[in-house]
Amino acid sequence: MMENRPQGTQADALKAIEDGGVVIYWRPGCPFCQALDEGLGEVGDRATWVNVWEDADASEFVKSVNDGNEVVPTVTTSEKSFVASSSKAPKIVALAIEKSGK
Image 1 (cartoon, rainbow, N blue to C red):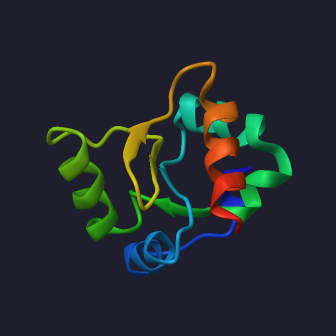
Image 2: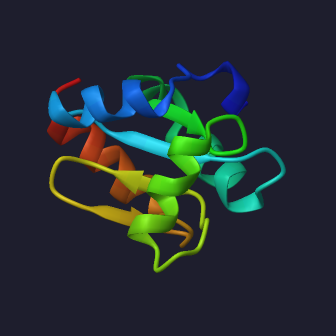
């Protein structure tokens, strides 16, 4: 479950991004977040997970990269941010995590 993933704040997320890591913004009850979590398996532990309902700065960041909408799961790397809600999302995010070397 996402709650068991390495959790962070927006400050942690910014540091992870600066260091080349992958950040996954999520919220409880989101079926797309749950599907991404399950699809990533253990590789998901190498990302920083941020609950947008528990961190107002994270919520504002997600809105800033999604045209004012708090859309999750939003995945952010040093290169881009994207909504990871398609059935291919776990593979795409896993590749980003692998690429990060974290």
